[in-house]
Picture 1 (cartoon, rainbow over the protein chains, first blue to last red):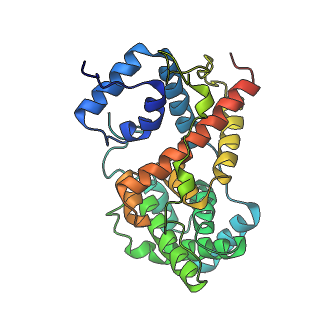
Picture 2 (cartoon, chains in turn cyan, blue; picture 1 turned 135 degrees about the vertical axis):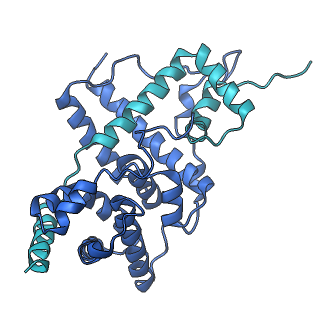
Picture 3 (tube, one colour; picture 1 turned 180 degrees about the vertical axis):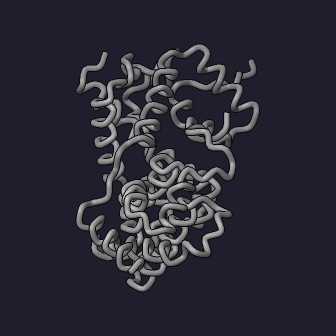
Length: 80
Length: 218
């Protein structure tokens, strides 16, 4: 009996970044995508990951007050 | 599917209008740029140097360098890429002067741990390797208030990461720099970057899941 290559949830989670970065070959990609087509739990995992990425990208992350003031003062000085 | 994330047309600098304004000394433009980048700049610098004060120095020197260099900035790269290249170079130089170990000198063995607790998968039986405790089926926070709160929480989670993971996820996922740019400025391979990004994203996703659970957004 030949063992069919397969991707289970534990492998999907381990390989998800490689997949998203385009680092998998065509066969590996196809196994990942096949798993996603039958596994709603991993689809949820991926959705959560994508949502976290969107939140990180949009998160306001202002400069600390004193640093901000020092930098603005430096700008004024440079234009004097 | 390659390079998920915000699609950005090649060569378009989202900061182009701010650069123009900044050249004429527009303080509001500079304040916008400071707020857009300085917190990340601090985190990245802090990975290379010994103290928070040293990291602040590096950030200030970088901005001063940018202001002085604006006249000759040829816009072959985006402002963001240029800025972070200068920052990483200055931080690395300062770290070397302080005889600090570089954040990317080695991938530690601790990085071999899985990003999701193995207890969450079936150990035995025909469903071995499949989820036993899958991610909860709930919606992602849509409301603005919750999204802001989630943002602060994920930034806090990033600050708990080891320096090398913190630097990679900040540049890639908070700032949206692409893989090639980041590998180039950090002087690491694509493979190394992917491992660090994978570890970092795993922890941030876990923090996000805890937040959704705690907020009972189901």
